[in-house]
Amino acid sequence: MGQIITQVDAFTNTPFAGNPAAVCVLPAPQSEEWMQKVAQEMNLSETAFLVRQEDGFYLRWFTPTTEVPLCGHATLASSHVLWSEAHLLPDEIARFHTKSGLLIAKKLGSWIELDFPVNYSEQTTAPSALGEALGVPLKTVLQNSLGYLVEVESEELVRQMQPNFELLKTLPAADIIVTSSTNSDSEFDFVSRFFAPSLGINEDPVTGAAHCCLAPFWRDRLGKNEFLAYQASSRGGILKVRYDGGDRVYLAGQAVTVLRGELLF
Image (cartoon, rainbow, N blue to C red):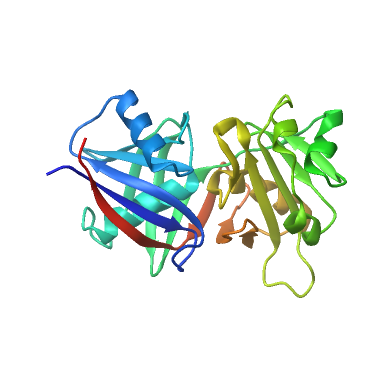
């Protein structure tokens, strides 16, 4: 029998929405070359690989072109697979040993809560081509370990923008979070999109790691600790975000399995 691989739509409870990730629970470690080839074959924004450890699972994430140090939606998808495929009991906590340290996931009814490290942003001077590449006026520009964090004036600008990805690739940091507060009648506190051409992903449908940057940003501006956030990609995704001002951000989302298959090689 070959290696089972499961495809999960994360940060949604609706099939064909949210952010898809492939998940492999491996019986033993595999080479980086093999994992990268599987991620390229799956051609999703992330493919997650897990190996059981004595006190949890070792977890790595690969885009079609590279390994990344942190991925929220593929961690959510991995947690969903561990519980839905009986690798863990419903009341057990999922513990992941990763290149970003220990990550924790808890099952809370139909939602899964992830415990992630906060990612602070600092003021920076925007490259002259940034506004041209995004095609919208820029209100605030910060920088963090993911890239630029750009605030614009309105939800409509976030939703309607059409970046020039070739120009984005020429910037000092090609990966960009764009965000705004929402209209007064919205159920959400803020909206965002995440563009990551340097990772081989022009636009990521829903990005947990980006919300580790957005949580402190919007806490400072909105004066609250809990948010309902919407990532306004074409697929769309919903996150519950909680940040109390420490070094951890709590992200909650839902997930649904859409495909399960077998790798033969």
